Structures are given as structure tokens and as C-alpha cells.
Amino acid sequence: MRKLTFILFLLASNTVAADTIQKWTDDSGRVHYGDSAPASDVTQSRSLEIQNTFDPVAYEQAVKRNDALNKEIQALERREKETAKSAKKRLDKYFEELDRKNSERERKKLQKKKAREGGRNHSSIKLKRGKASRNPPSKKSPLILR
Image 1 (spheres, rainbow, N blue to C red):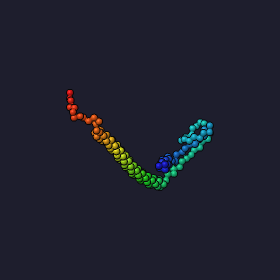
Image 2 (cartoon, rainbow, N blue to C red):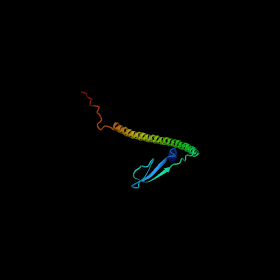
Image 3 (tube, rainbow, N blue to C red):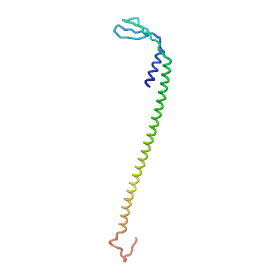
Image 4 (spheres, helix red, strand yellow):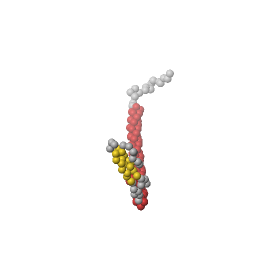
């Protein structure tokens, strides 16, 4: 991407070719560049001429290389997206399996807990029903309801 930007910059700068740029130094010694040198405060002035170095053949070759690089980059991006999708699918599948195992484990724990509680309740009911009373009801005393 940087190469493309650099190539485009070079091409854009070549279209401004055959212009004259002035370089001058002011009284404080600072160097300046511009289209024309100012009339005052100039200690030294020099004119630089820029030559047109645009090569259409080199430009076409650069465009072809750039297109090939762009296609390669797009192919790499597609492969990376496909790899990311497959990794996401595997990760989702792993988490689903983990959730399923956890819910199964919780369900089994709950069943065991219910079985233990049911066993306790059943045993306690048996014990309560199965105990013989210390004072058996006598056959002589009638049941009185008021």
C-alpha cells in the first residue's frame, strides 16, 4: 500500500514538470523555496528548473505491477476471511459442546439430588408408618366425637 502511495505521489509530482522554483536565503540565514523570490531581505537567490522525467512505459509497468499486487492482496484477504470464518465455526461448535456437557452435568447432579432427597423422604415415611405405637388403642374404650 505504501508503494502504491509513493508511486502515485511520484506520478502526481511529474505532472507539474517544467516549472521553475526559486530558492533563496533571507538575512537570518533561513532557506526558502517558492515560485518567485521576494524583492527584499534576500541575501542569495538561485533559480532551479525541474525537468519532466515522466516515462509512459515505466508508468504502464508500474500500473501492471500495482494491479497484480492488488489482486494478490485481495486473494490473501479472502483466504484470511475464510480462515477466520472456519475458526469461528470451530470455536462456536466447541462452546456449544461445552454448554451441552455442562447442562448434562447439571441435569445429572439434579437427578442425583432428587434421588437422594426422594430416598430420604421415602425412608422417613416408611419409618413413621412402620413404627408401632406404645399405647395401642384399647378395644374397650369407644371413640367419642364431639
